[in-house]
Length: 198
Image (cartoon, rainbow, N blue to C red; front, side, top):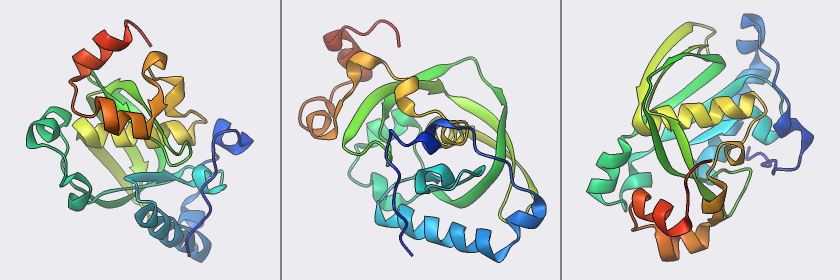
């Protein structure tokens, strides 16, 4: 069942979600929620979805970056973003336990802030400890676009959205981004928009 996506301005998107117990994770209700979230993510389409985005304040998110989502992106841009397909996965009670020093900047959008995008700095590499959909411990070492998706979704579970981290001068409609900025380098976007700090 496709779920309704909560939009920015709802209190639930600004609160830290509660952690799940192993018994809850293995319950039919959570299994159904995961299935419904997966259908919602595919329908959107998007690469990640956190439970608070569908009005459920629990520490659960899903990620899936299908190959077809990047087929129209130039190979050089894919390489720059370190973007590769990510198979469907569930992260529960995630915690970022480490990150590299390097940060990278790319445009992000959000299903809870439809129609907009902005340049957001994120750590290039992170380590995440979490539980999977079977309440089994998992350690994720991620880099590039995968690390960005994880950070974006974990932010949602902690009551944050990308606008809290963006370079505010780069906030724009997705339509303007596609029409005027999509083919520009990040350095050129920053130069032309006068960006020097978030």
